[in-house]
Image 1: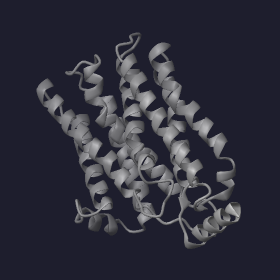
Image 2: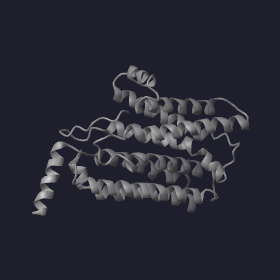
Image 3: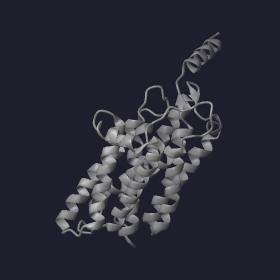
Image 4: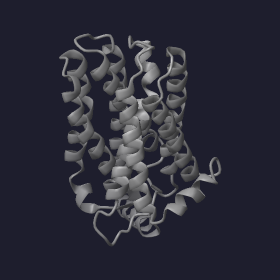
Length: 282
């Protein structure tokens, strides 16, 4: 759950973090995108228990994975006490709030007004979780993470969540088409900015995983195909839940790309960069 420093002497060791962030951003996105779905035609009095169940399952799965990564459950409790003071504590709190709201939506029969209010609270908690995910990975010295790359979890989460609502609640209709297209475009722009950041940083720091960095252009294309195209299939061709399968894979590829294409600014890499520049200027 926490943003660990890459171990440059080992292979890919961030599998747990890939799984946690994939589950957390997807669950938070489903919660956060609910009001957007209302704005484009989803009935506000629809209880959406299926969507709430997906939020609960994804967030709880992410928290369980996170406990395994942290080593001891007590560390998560200590993180809760630091809510607002650091990114990790804030992340745990928003995850817990999102899961709690989703649990109520799944288990408690409520009137339409109460359902809407609870979904709004779940949406705010989901947005908070997406923002805290970005905060956790905004680290100094990580060239490919700061700025847009860290913030890109927000448009990606909203896109995934919106497509979930569109696929399940808008059968044989297209009221959500423009919303999906706009979110897909925003996510594609954020992905393009991330790719540009990696390309710009490739010569400025030390790659966390050189083998993945060597294949980065294939990763760029695969992620784009899996994340950017399925929303079009869902809203234009009524692909329904089938369109979510490649998107789920795309989220995993996105998180793998985040860690495998990390670039750390080290003293050695900075010296090498300066020497290379001096040599080229001679």
